Length: 245
Image (cartoon, rainbow, N blue to C red; front, top):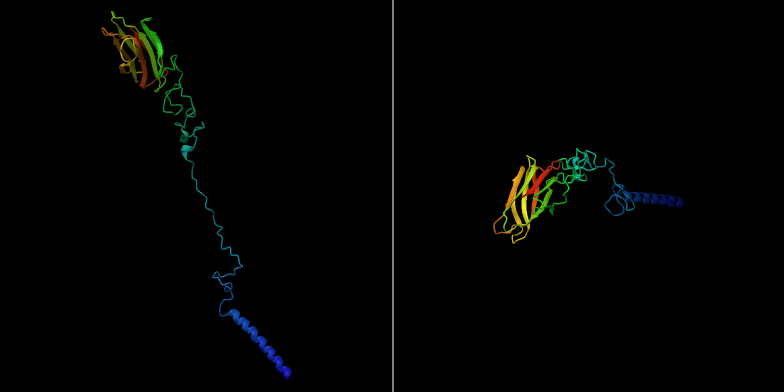
């Protein structure tokens, strides 16, 4: 009888203990409750990678190419690189600006590389065409190769105190649709006259100036004639410069 009572007591105690542990775990709450004390809803030992959006990846829409950066004529230069006529492969910044009334090298100057005449370079320093003391008629045949070309010629003469003279200077062959400038400068004087501009004319066709002797004044010296284009330079057409007394 005693043995039976002890066995029943042991069974009851084990059953109570099992029920107690289950109750403690349930606690009236979800079995998935956080057991490490934080609020993340997972154990501290878990690694949560979260949802990864594997949808479309955005890529930059470059659109059509910039037309200014496209070399349309195949000369190696685009408009963005300085090609001023991207429909003509002979026109680009590396081209030689030949005599064709076109800005071949896109530098805003026309025909400056055209074949020079026999007096170049005379843009800044005058080329001597002679002395009227040795030859009463001096001349030069040349071209204005572009709007930036300037032709300078010098001549000289002596003024005797008993002589009277008139020096005539003519520039002919200027295109009718052009405007050129013809200037006479005194570079040096045998007397006491200053170096300065003496006369200047503008126009087309033919231009002329005269220098007359002044009584009791030594007008002799070295003079300069300057030929330049204001508009209508024509490297394919020669002009004639003539000086006489």
